[in-house]
Image (cartoon, rainbow, N blue to C red):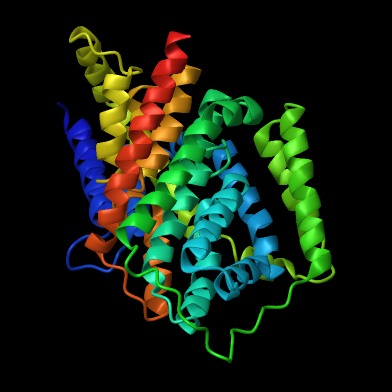
Length: 410
């Protein structure tokens, strides 16, 4: 191994250890900072040139993610997320029905909007309403994160890793939905069933306080505009308009507003996630140049293991998503195995998304829910999440693998 390759491997390992731990011990640098610093080291050392760094960044993926963030920001600015959360928490239904409603709303919204932004917006208001109802928010927060992940598995725009896979494989929206909706729906059922079973003794109806949570105001015009544009976006997908172009058209129209300043809308964009993607693109591309991924791929095939098979993809996504996270895992697998067929890419999208429910560190949505709940003085512990996350993931994961195996035989 040359000195250049050794440095690339060292940076790669350091970055992905940081992805697994969330930060480097003793420092406050987080995942985004770690990925960015890794890219800076590679560029500053001359290993990756400026042109190579730009070429490594998958611009269509970033554009789709950015555009969906703008669309989701429109819903947030209209008060739609706060209204959904408040209505869920304030309903006269039983605690179990509230749980089902939380799963249904989070899953449906995450299928067409960025799941990370959905949970970011819904968590605070949901917590406040549940606390006012004297209900323990923790099972509902687990269900919120689990449903957001499960629902996002249904579409090629539901989460960052699906967007990336969709761009790499040029996967169409509706065919992807047809294949992935069944395992996603089963996963939503698993989320509800497991959370209800594990917390069933806590789901005891209690009287609401007389002073209920004030329902947030909704900008009806802005909400109607966002809803119509969402339908227009789905229609463009059906007409096979490129995802990046369709989403950017919608984002551009949304920025033309008399009610919301561009600065307000852009403030709701998760720039940290976009920077994280850029850093990981550069780091994983640099590893590919060393030839090590190609060598590993050759070794797998020599051992009789097909990288696109269930026996390889399933355990890798389950382990990788809960060590370094599902987004970094997908980036790494695409770098090592750049020629996966469409069916394998679709399976990778679903499995990496569902695997993210296993542990808190498995997905950004889980981490966002935990951090936003902590800001509302609700602590959701690692093992509290794991006792629901592990069974819901194993059940939905096994069902998804069975679904794809059945499809492969037909």
